Length: 576
Ligand code: ADP
Image (tube, rainbow, N blue to C red; front, top):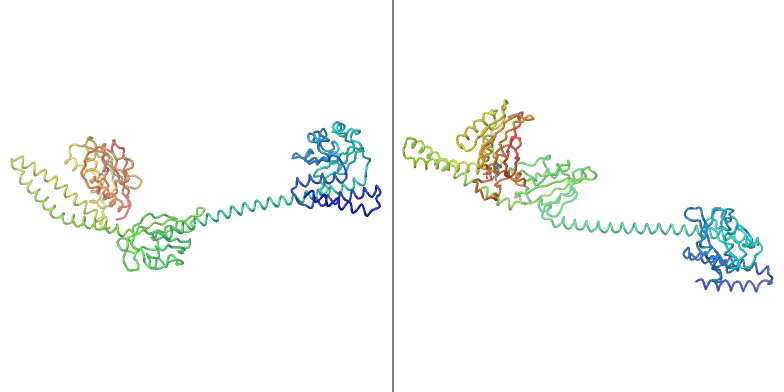
């Protein structure tokens, strides 16, 4: 490109030479015209900034016939000029001067470039070896350089840099040339400003490109996530409902449409509730305030609640329902409700329950009758001297009592399962009940010392027999699971408006991971030491249900190998 342009300039020069009279003045004029033309052409090429500036030095130097040219720019500190580019007409002829140029920096007013910076005007030096301010004079002498000029690169009166040229001959001042290079300085300044604008624009474009790329990537990822979510949503066997804050159903999956038999999208929560689709296990309709989605929209989480759903065929399905609020920056923006059909496993569970209910019901009468007869037999034998028969009958009675208790436990468990555990509340003396039961136990087992501590003056509004059943369960467990210790401490007291009863034993204890589970139906701790304790794993589950129905609390604190404290509390102020 540079070579083609050069050829073009020299052809133009030849043309101009032919057209003029050919004196030295006109030669000079031609030379300057050529320099201006070459500069304008170079600056219009929009090559990269560095390449253009190097070409600028070359075209000025060559067209005006100077030896060395340098471009000085103001450094980062804004306090010094330093050389950014150097050009030589004949490379290798001015090594000393070029080395000095590369090394030196100029402050404002210092040396030829510094003076040009300060005055903002072109400067002429006839012979650099004769003036004291020319700091590179020594090197200039070495390379035989004498004449010099410099001009500022200006933009709107601001100096952006300085260009200077040196020649081998002494050069008398040339005002016209100075004027011309002054104008050139402005042109170069404008070019630099233009390039800076282009560079800034390019960097902005680059930033924009990167941001767009990032946004595109994020959009692709979001789309992928959305399609993953869609796939999960659509293939999920559970019915899923998404609600907005106002209670409108905004989205459901195919399983939800199948379960209800219609598409509830767009329906208001209340019109959906109005269709009485959800029922409790015992058949009552789930009221609007009880709907899991209502609770979730109020910020609460519902986990696996057993409910019934009537399907399009009119069949009641058992589902577990979970609902959770959707939150953005702490406030609820919607809710998700999930219905999981457990009808099949529920059916199996129900058959099991029905069997247990039927079996325990059928067993109850014969067992009670045999127990009654065995007691009569025992009484008849009181006067007998046949000690062996007396012993067997007594043992039979103990086992029959256990059998009777087991049947009662099974019956209670089935009642609880069906939600049929009835309570007969009355105000009674809980302390007396505790002391009476402790006394009964002392009579049954003399292996354990049962100590009762504390007291309670107030009467408790509760079902006396059922609370007695809980205490009995605690006490019999305390005896059963502490075969090697002798002491059981029962404490009764009032605490924060509640009656608090605890039973402490010093037996085998319960591992932390099992402590919560002991209240589950049929849960029994797996005894690794091989000790066998009889039981069904129902007593604590029944106790928990009884205490829950009284709005009280039940719990355990225990340490493996050290013993357990089972406790329950009952509110004293509850109405009957
Ligand atoms: P079970 O008829 O098996 O005793 P429970 O429901 O009364 O049924 O108790 C459940 C399980 O909790 C028991 O099988 C036993 O592993 C554990 N457990 C209950 N009470 C105690 C106790 N005082 N000490 C240690 N383990 C206990």
